[in-house]
Amino acid sequence: MHFIFKPMNDDEARTIAAWHYEPPYDFYDMNKDLEDLKELLDACKRTDAYFSVINENDELIGFFTFSPQPEQNLLEIELGLRPDLTGKGLGSAFLEAGLTFARDAFAPASFALSVATFNKRAIRTYLHAGFRPRDIFMQQTNGSQFEFLRMIRTG
Image (cartoon, rainbow, N blue to C red):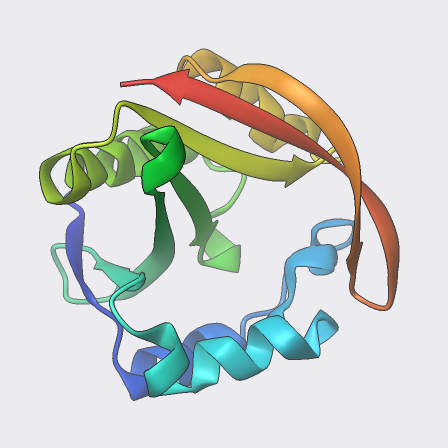
């Protein structure tokens, strides 16, 4: 599969906002966290951080957000694959495409991401891609507190 990255537009943001994942991954549905949803749907708040990922058939298949942390010389990433494409072995290629794009666009020394600790499937993908666990923390989201694992990858 070929991955094309482009700044997210309003139509793509609305499409992503409507995505629904199967339990327990419905935790990642955008409507579960109103603050994240508002940011996604607001072009002024999305700024240059949100990118849509399109395949060779011009279909929206996912997204990435990139948040530079210059004081640490790292790039914080978030990502999401379209619900019907999850669990089909595309995660590693999708992640690597995002890291390649980010390396070219931002040139960070390291990458960081956070993942809910229940999401063993994603954690395996991140470990396979060279991310290493940094720490576990609690985060307020989706109306409660949840445990997250912060992971770091050099270059």
